Length: 349
Image (cartoon, rainbow, N blue to C red; front, side, top):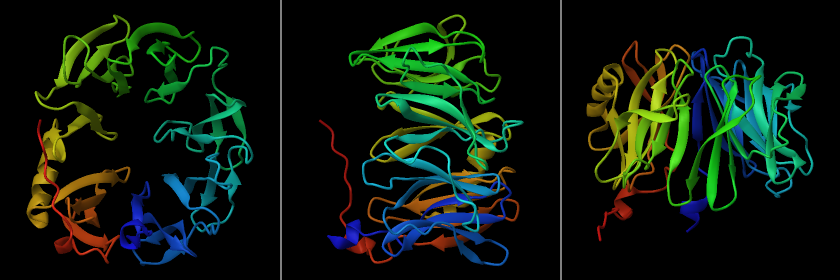
């Protein structure tokens, strides 16, 4: 039993924005901490040194690492910022009796190179308010006067909060505003029986990509939704057998790359020829394994790849697309022998 639940050797790989480093979480004194590896030299630097609680989710913001940590075991997560050598650690959110998390990393937003948006329940334990935070100084300001007690938020590609939601436990109402200075206005109410889940804005920030089963569907599809006209414009992808969970896209090229859904395993449908070609080029190297590209640098030439299957927890790889070079970087659970594990078989009824 211990083999299945003990910490992996290395996991949660990310690539730095400039593609020069990778980062990951690994055990240190029985707790998961963050490490950074320079690709050119292979030098590894430990960023965090927590011995009380595991360091949770994290990401790169410029040349800094943003991570969350639950100090007291009460699920009141704190958002921290640190230099990649582990110095200059800043608590970006209150350290007592407040739960916080990152809403938007503002990646690639002009003028926001040193800022992120966090949400926290400091004002009201039941409601999370959005704040703009400087990752170097910790200075912050509230972005929305949340007197209406909205419960969740969605930003557009410029980092402007444009969608808010509120639920009474039976139905959810969605609100929209055209700009940061405009008031929120309700545009859709759905019951708990239906789905209308905004994914992200179109690249011109006018419309929304949404996963929904409205419109007479019995399976969720992804569609483009016109906020101004309160109407569905086009169906991006629907599957006759499964709910479609979401979309991926290229930040650099501003195109949709794939839709994905869970069948008996995670499946993808390509919406972009360049992405399809890259997967096709890599496929022979993984034979019958599932594999997914899940992280990239700003130039979208260097990628992190996971490959595994229902019996194999998998391996992590670094892929340089320009050189067509694939390098294994970690086996997170080397003590698990896939030949000793049971095959997963789908059932229908």
